Image (cartoon, rainbow, N blue to C red; front, side):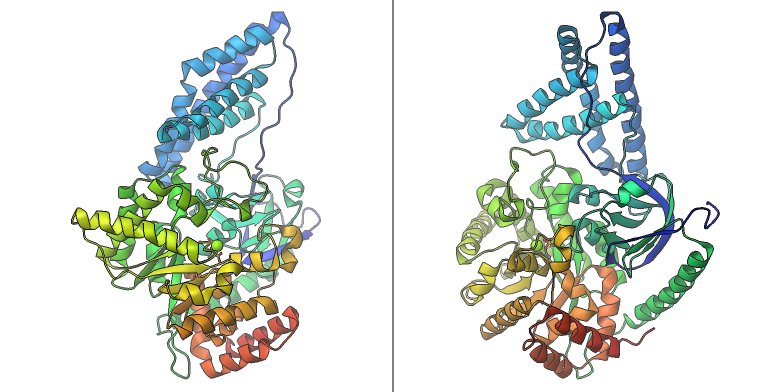
Length: 588
Ligand code: PEP
Ligand code: MG
């Protein structure tokens, strides 16, 4: 640890995205396509160049083996198996021989030759009409990047196996990076870009570790190993903290821990308002490993199982059986409490790595080929998932919901495919819950505006405010440049939620909110006042929301919402909500 205050203290301000305070060393993670120079090799230096290539292959092999061993130790042998395919790429004689041939013909430096050959392989594999072989394109791309980095003498990085407890400081963290973060060693996550609802943040919240986004150029201002403070309450990062600052943060941390402790103790009690209205608080999860967290945090079942993480984690499409086993485990472990499984929401900000043919680049991925649109065009893949969910429904209380529904036609088409799956299972006498509820997520204004039509078909609704806000206000949820305009208390959002709830209730359909808004006590009272029946959030955030529920009257929350609906300014609505919450959450 450096002596505090050895250099001038610098404060960088970003957007607080996950609460908590961390002090530790930076693990700098820069995501970019590797850039390399192109030059001619003198005839006398040819042998040297080939030896340089062989050395890079050797170093890459050692690195991958080391990562594989660490992943096996930290995450298990199944996760470690993905690296077998990477090692096979390094042994591919054709790839190596072709690179050397290209070098002999062109005399270009070996980075250029290897890149040309591997790019040809990637394109060829990506076009093959065989799923397994197509996935090899992703493996070749990963390995090729690593080999080129080694040729250039750059150190490769991997968030899945940090050497020690570290603060990840990244320019960008993709959902597949986020899925692989070493949860035992990452103590905070800080990014140059991103927003409060980006997936790295969702992962940070589920790990109960502080996160800050929108720090612009922080990755250029820190080095690997620098000591920094991350204040996830006010969104600041402090480089070279002075002794006084460290002391101040030490005190804050102790205080906050005390508050957390008290919230946690209160969390064992039922989620019921002072005037006797029960408010089910459910959990958002991405992996089966999080089921223990659901229980530890006293959630009443799972309100959102983001099933795409099974795909993102393994960077391949899981089989029906693999999915069934994951959903069955979830259903069984909840002892009769609901498990709401959302069908695949890939694409948009969650492209599936290594499948360029399925997810080709799009000008507007958020408005593009994602989620239910993707599933309706990949019916076989969709049916595998639907059958897996139906089969799991025989083992507990499973609910199914479709993401990114824009209107009734999509819902009908998805349901027709679900009916085919039901028929197939009946034919093979495979048990499933014939009464399993099927619902729609409300994330697109088109669905919100037609919720009365959808309510005739949909058993329940879950409002995904992360996307609903982005599509209603035309604010890219991942763009830090406009993050200040991403306002959950915008009157448009309140009106939409109000209408959705009113129309759904007319037809006796329950409405849940599973976007990040539900997990913030400042918004939770407003949502409940607007008539939302249930809230679903990352498990560690249940305690503060439950504390609020138990400290408020539903009649007061309704009055708050009625008043808020008459206001014009998002700031004014926010201030009202904050006052309401602060008055009732005097835990500090
Ligand atoms: C949402 O959009 O609010 C939601 C819960 O889905 P995701 O964050 O996975 O897009
Ligand atoms: Mg969404």
